[in-house]
Length: 367
Image (cartoon, rainbow, N blue to C red):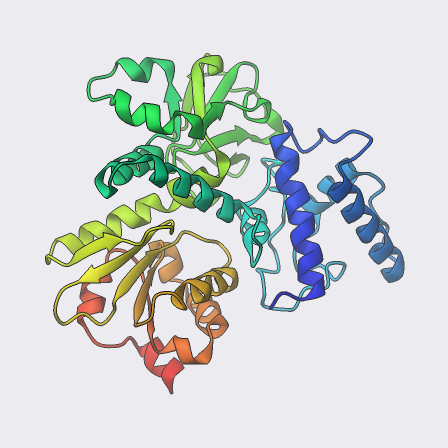
């Protein structure tokens, strides 16, 4: 799947992702970093070949990525590889999209997802046993933001904080507006108002002109407004995207397994994978994801499945599990020999499905 065009698009996504770490998508200044200059040069040449007006600077290229979706002919991507309407820069938040982060990680050793796994591997090495690691991992997923005052709360674990402290950073300038920081009231990840407006009258309500890192959260939920951002530490972005975001799916799925007494143990070195224990199970392992690009998710799972033989369940948010387009794209992207051994499920129906009969989709895929 890793064509020359996709490799170029992945490099572009890497430039977009790294730009926000500088402070904002407009923070690049001459001389540009080598990768950014190389990607700009490549896109200018491709645009000239196609008769399309090219971007003339890296900030211009980043603005260009806000307006041009993945299906634009200038990128030359194969149809069906990505959602054709997806962009690398969010049109409201002006931040790297989830698609951008997933693209950087596809079949690449230095992507954002790979960085998240490396950070967790390092954390596991510092823990004396699996229980200590699981407590630390759970803390990270449930505490995207740590306020200085939190350390005085009842139940605060100084030992856990000591282990995970280096996985947090001060709030980046790009997420602070007029001395205020917003969090989504649904996914609890960073949020912004369109146009980088400052909240005027308390916490605003999520809507079409707001952005949060979760991107798919419903409108109408009131955001959390945090003043004094200098007293706040934020979980590193790779862990926000690939640990904290799918953690709600993971917790809901594990709770569903616990009800009928299905046992499980974590798979070391992975972000949300568990081996299952119990009689009469249709699958040997379960894997939790929250992704927006099903084809890239299928590729990632295929890589993992080679190390964990046997039938497996892939658990995604209910909105994805209920989408016929998502399910079809995921199934078709799996190798044919793997399709009959993979169950795609939402967390609510997980326990019933791994004890039950194959879904109609699986039977169709097998046929």
